[in-house]
Length: 79
Image 1 (cartoon, helix red, strand yellow):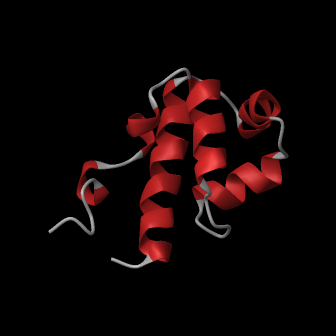
Image 2 (cartoon, rainbow, N blue to C red; image 1 turned 135 degrees about the vertical axis):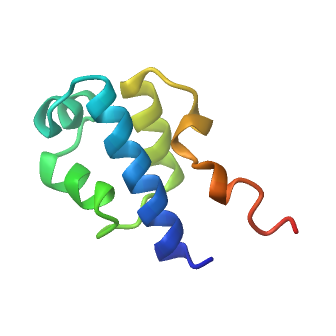
């Protein structure tokens, strides 16, 4: 699995969690101290999602960090 595929899966998970929390892009971005454009780009995998961004998102959505990591990529590289 490529890094862009992983970013796409994580981005989709970020969007799902944001929507579950009932947050708009603008409200979620404010909680993360970033712009709504940047958050949108993470959700669409247009920007690389770094670990620090994932930690910030997990805090903003009040979920464990692992909630942002889809099952299909857990353990990738540990075959």
